[in-house]
Length: 419
Image (tube, rainbow, N blue to C red; front, top):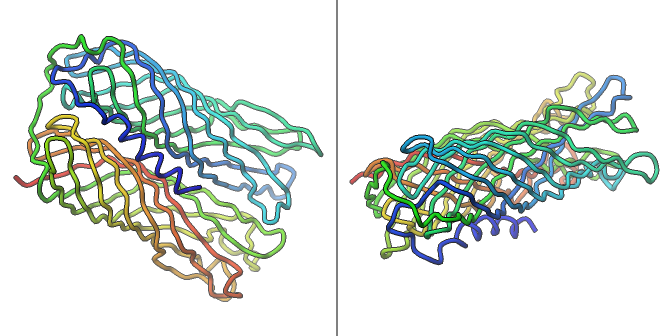
């Protein structure tokens, strides 16, 4: 199921590349509608307010997501695009973190909606990088009592970053990342408190009305040599989940939520096949600090730390296939092998059962890369990295406690291409 959601991200990126881009500068002013698919890392802060002392949990559920959006843009300066957008996205995330269904489902996040403003900068006549900020709502359904439910819409702030490129007169493809954080806490009839949040990376296809009537802009059209070595650095943000398998009745399985900025670098090589396509391979290393906590302190020591695991680095070897929108802009998908440096805290598990291990995994994603000079390009990409093996703690039976992470990330990269 997870692999299917990951393939959807790359598929949406390439869905727009069936026609060539117009040589004429597109018109970024006017109205548009669109659809998007991707991956959502959904977090839920959960507290039973009747507990003494209160214990606050951060649970996670990663799901596929799809949505629709529409809005309008205008040129507020020769290379500055401003606008507003409405959106609706299906999430369908169910949180049931207790083993063997003990306690059952605690909540489900069904959909989100938002209204936001966006401000963008034209790197080339065909490509835009933008930021968004707005008001959003997150639906929650919470079981209460024996067979009843509470429903709520939690309001919050939504901010994001994205890149968009025209692939024909009226069609553009976009990749964006959005983060929702609530303004309020929802408390149900059972005196349980909930704070939902999510981090979403999607690829979308937009239809622009009257965009073929565009004229020249002041944005340059740098010509990139897409064949050769590429040196890259990237800043990113990621949301991780950690599944913790245990066969202890009544224990909390999770998965658990963590979030962190990241810093990465990569070395790659691209080869331009013809006028339209580029293929390449790259090795990358990314450093992060995704730390997972269990407030139940399942460790037998009363004063033990609540930190039970972490992910501190990800390395990957990926190949990519890209479609050239024009000589300056590439839309691409990528996939390959990865490894996640995963730690089990020795202070949490009994008998110094903590350990660190590189877990093998896979990485999928997609993005948009566009020129800012003849030998410099800027990219925005989203990736999902999933461990295909588990870290097994060493203090108890070999099959009792297993940690398996996954990480959804968005990165802004700067790429140097020696001429």
